[in-house]
Length: 99
Image (cartoon, rainbow, N blue to C red):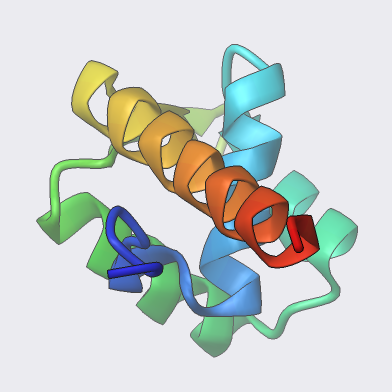
């Protein structure tokens, strides 16, 4: 099938964005992701929770002074799954281009 390897976890624009940011940065905090991806608090929280439940990202909560800070990193499993998803998309697009 032409869509083999497409990971449904990354169909959402928000989740694709979260993983993209985390793949090129060692980590990103909640505020940075929210700003970069133009998401609401609730929307970002639900998408990061879903990725965390799949084991694709890891969350670290701490306090900086008196302010809470939540930081996310891509896990090894998440990096592999995202890379495989991107490869599947590339393969699909290359297949479409061929006569």
